[in-house]
Image (cartoon, rainbow, N blue to C red; front, side, top):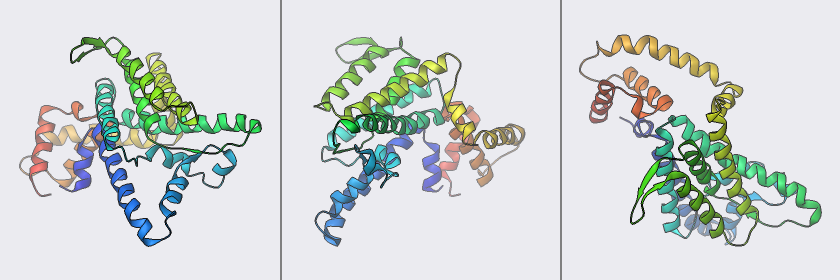
Length: 286
């Protein structure tokens, strides 16, 4: 089984954690490599080009930063980075109890992008008031989007906390969001992006409870809806008929179908037999 296939077998929280870990490692390597290959200020310039400027005019020269800023995870505080990964894992798995893998990815990706878009809007409004200098970056807004969505989807869920006993999820999320924003220090556009991430997660969850699934709406607007419908039809029409007849080794075709179902519905949606086949595939050399 290839590394990509093993990655696909994981739930979305683990996939996000692994992805951020890979980005962190890449930044760490570049922080050592770039100063040796060029001027001393080359790495800070590289970081600046990936971060979202507070000044909207500067953004026009690096529009890609709207999509790279949420993935900026380089920090000298490794403990803080590890805590972020644990939070993503915990809240992501809570969301998986009600939704699917794609929902966790949707909240993480769109939560970050929406938060930084809010920063652009607010900085455009504030620009006539003065010159804006500075940059925002980090996965914090996306993390708060996951936390807020989990808290709004399951507000009354009891979580066992050490020394505190059972605490309802909504209070844990509220305290976490407040602590996260206060920890940023002096109010700035960075703190506004974190608020924006939390508002996005809250908006998604409240709309979902009303029967409006913005994940499906966005995917359909991006023309993914028809392809998913085709994949779902293909899976239900072929896999159930083949499942009982497959014996012995797991073929590439069967593994692809299992990975397809994991990607759409999550590992928990697999039947016992399907989980056994995945486990067998992980042990054999495909």
